[in-house]
Length: 140
Image (cartoon, rainbow, N blue to C red; front, side, top):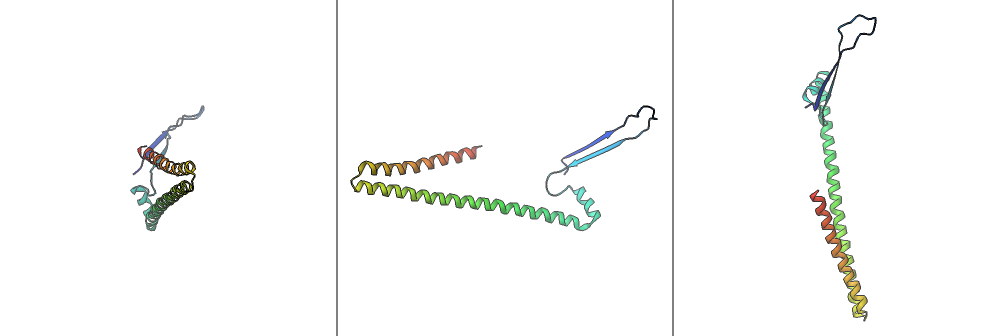
């Protein structure tokens, strides 16, 4: 359906020395949103060439399918990115904990405790901050 239908009528004033004539200029403007024009416009296209309406609808369907595919790819890549991040975070955590245990068993108690605890605290903080950011995005 047309969004806005505006008609402007202008009545020119006669110049000095000219006879006054009754003349009017009318401008019309119609706006619509979306890929498919309103039914009245489609009918006008069909009057020109019956194939035009089918081509316009086919174009809109292809555009919608393309947008859906782009959105699906974006969602899929986000899922893959999160999975890779989780896996790498797990590896970092296991490495820090293993390194800390190895350092403690090798007689380096303070260094082992610092490495192990630092890895665990780092992972916990990343998860907590990540959840907060996600909740902020969902709330807004």
